Length: 243
Length: 243
DNA sequence: TCATGTGAAAACGTTCACAGCA
DNA sequence: TGCTGTGAACGTTTTCACATGA
Image (cartoon, rainbow over all chains, first blue to last red; front, side, top):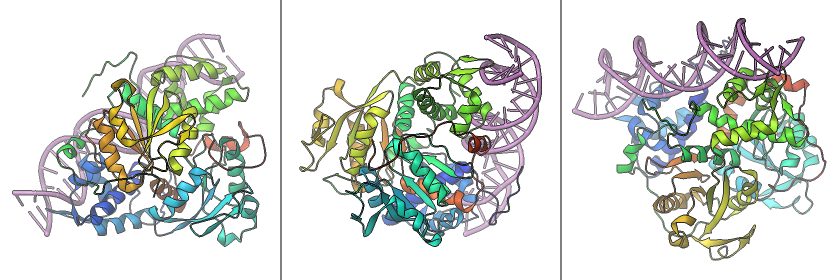
């Protein structure tokens, strides 16, 4: 019912697209701790999925493993980047510079591949003008004045619920076609706009459900990691904020 | 491969469990704005899914619709609550009271059904003792001293990445079996522990992918909402923080 | 007449099991 | 020997299409 030629190769199923960045993070941590070759079994244990699934997922990108030994971590990371198009580096705008907006700006800019926070917006005079990580918080009105080239491709909404729809409308109006909504509010946007929610209450509810009925999704290979802790954090001491 | 009798009725598929809280939120907003009867078509448009899917999902809970008119919003909310076991009200502990922890504590306690934030932890002396929404932030060491009855069922990790694994270990040790991890770090926990990640970088990467190939998941009924905005936020003015 | 509820079919995703290669 | 890559089997989820009932 379509036949999208897109960029090249096969076609990566939605489910796989969601898992690839997860593998990538795991790989990055393994590489950081000195591991260079990883087997599908190890990756699976850490990602809490089935090893066959890992192999299927990765085989969609090409044949990058070495039979008998495994995958080269650093190389795989690059391949996943390529497959996800994380070389595009989309500019991200964060709207709503409260606690959440700050936390995301401080963590996200560096944690994420393929994206960088390029602009911060708010309307509170107490916040507009403030500088975070070298970026000035601007008034929402200015978003319309940006040169087309400077406009964000992705909008992150971290406003209070009551402002979220209005913000979404404005972002859509200036051409944003991908939204990540942290506000606990249902948004109505044109169908061409990609929209994802990050909703604590939904997450907690789902966790609560599986807690009530320990029957949850995906078990399996995870038991492996009970015996073989492949990654262990080192240091001791004090948590206090997101990086 | 199982045969869990669980609580009662059929068995709610994983995919549906994830959607139910979404419907619930939509219903809550519709009810709040005065709509009392909702059709599967409307719900579908707002949830950006197919109408048949909505009907299948809801029919798993029982036959609560009225042919010819639709579903009663308030009633459906209650039914979903019942089906998800959101009447259990699990106690949630938030560990890591930085910007993110604060934002979640301020929003979550009230936004979420079936859960309530019951304790806040950190180890930073500058933060321990502070009061947020009437709760004192306690030192992480005290978690082990809690009476079993007072112990959290769900742990939310909002520490820096480097502390996340250690915090997870402690939470698991005191009996927490559901974790929600906001730290950008892969965690290793026993297989009986439910673990969900909320990872901005993954979310952005997925959005970026679909942006590059507008071929995304689930379109369909959404086009409907281009013409019929069923919910529209009201007020004007200033975003600044999560509720 | 209009929208639910549901079998049956199609699409999709996962897992198995093993051939093939280092 | 050990682990990848993959057809084929299986299970789940989605979608269709329509009988059913308010």
